[in-house]
Length: 554
Image (tube, rainbow, N blue to C red; front, side, top):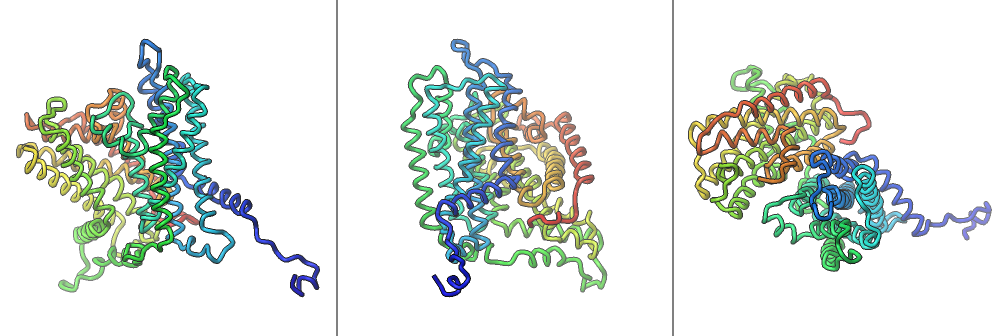
């Protein structure tokens, strides 16, 4: 004991033990996750809404007349798998990547908290949220749709859920370790989780394309979901133990843990990644670079010049952003070439050659990413940084700023459609008539403007750009499958759900315009698109904020 301590009679402060540190970190993680609207949407809202939609669309129909098994007996374990995946994987990846980007992990060496305890707290939060999502899905299934919980398979179900949480949390750690920025970790984890859920049959009950079984079997989501479905099947023999599925989950979890252990100590942004470059000032300079007096004429630019300048600035920003360019441009063109090569050029969907149908699908997907995701997220980012607020001090009117950004989205949508058609014509014998190309233009314009209006609704209602990007992706990817953008010729109930939203009508109208048997404009589909666009635009105009919320994170 030191002299000062002895003189005052006080005892030296003791460092908190491992248990107290872990509990404190777990409380912090749970508070952080609970305050995150993105996590709540993924962990609870998405599985619950999907379960209710299935119940409403399928009507809990009997799928096996001999046994009396109903749709919801298989939909409920799928919702459980969805909740575990979304509660364990993206939150861990995003939370840890944010901590690394802010330097929190680096500063652990100067605190009583070892890094492994911080990681354990993040995983513990995932365990709690995944368990809560599982409980909620089961309760809704049992009380709302008469789903049976099988007592003899309950121990195997609990072990399978624990293995799933551990596996997906470890993969989240690996994504955080590999991501140069928190934004990259969010995009990578969210998009891969939703895509894996679809190709693994989690969202599609009653039908899937043959390639989905092959691709999904490589990853851990399909064996996890199939093991849960078997454990909820009252006519499945045995106690529900699935050694093969457990082995796959353990193998993927171990691989994720090894990657995380090797790379988590590396500082982000050390390879010239976007994290190492200042973003705010260049973004502002790009936005106002064309607002000053034209040195050639000595005059300020007119409205057309200002709109064009904004369109050019937005286009350059997209090309410089690797993630935006990949999802909006490279992904639809690459998926088109891959899927058509796998399905074959002789496949026909509703009388239209598959290469033509899927060309329309990928053009719609490119438009969705550009207009529904990237455009509103970029505008929300400018708002969060105070750029929109400062427009009143520049020659640029708000409508000119938005018009320029929307023009850039329209241009990029047309570029994606042209590239997809070029690949189809060069390799898959896609032939679209001149009349079809002309009819496709108004469809692309109306569809893109409608999706942009819907995206601006998200930007108006959600608190910040991060929430806009995450929620937009959660909405767009499921709708892409329900709207036959990715999942063609699926179950009838999926199409019934898709008809309620504009994406399916966009895809239908573009397919009919490009139909080699006879191009035509679908007035009904265009009317639905126009109605969605008008309503969404009215909501966005009424609700949009030009200033960041006080106290919100930018």
